[in-house]
Length: 221
Image 1 (spheres, rainbow, N blue to C red):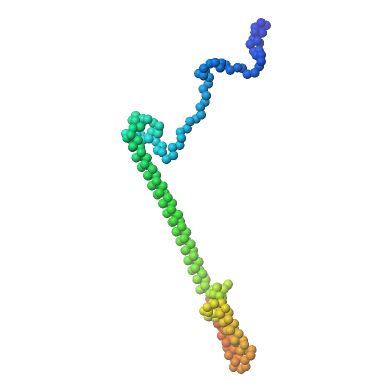
Image 2: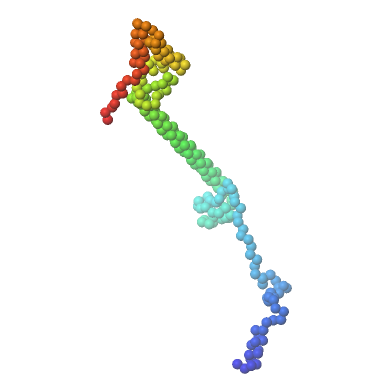
């Protein structure tokens, strides 16, 4: 390559004076058809709450969009009074069916909750009945009682004296009767003479017999 051609080539790649970005290739005096199109935002359809989401053709029963002017299957016009009346009746029937299904679903849910409550109540009643039967069986097997009518702790047999005391109306009367039943024989033994001491001894033996627990009977398993 000669020096003259090399110099011409270097002049083509030489930086322009002033630097900076290259000016717009499209002059400002040109029309807009030479400029790139401005991107438009995406347009969305407003939500039609409660409205019919489709239009059905009354001739061929084909569903079309709500913005269709003619049926895409049979090309029938969809904006006629007959077509609008047909779609209004159709949408009312659909809404009535939806309401009926919603009521049926609510009734089934209510019945399910009611059945669940009845089953839980039945299980609770059965458990209470079994607990009552077990308590009665324990009372029959072990017996026992206290002055206030409650069960005693431990497998003790009920006594005739305790049953007699529980026949009194309240706890103070039961305590007083127990004190009298024990105190009189002791006073007779301490301060009596002869037959009086004998009567006191007999009364004390009777009290001991009344309040002595019976022999426990064991079961053979």
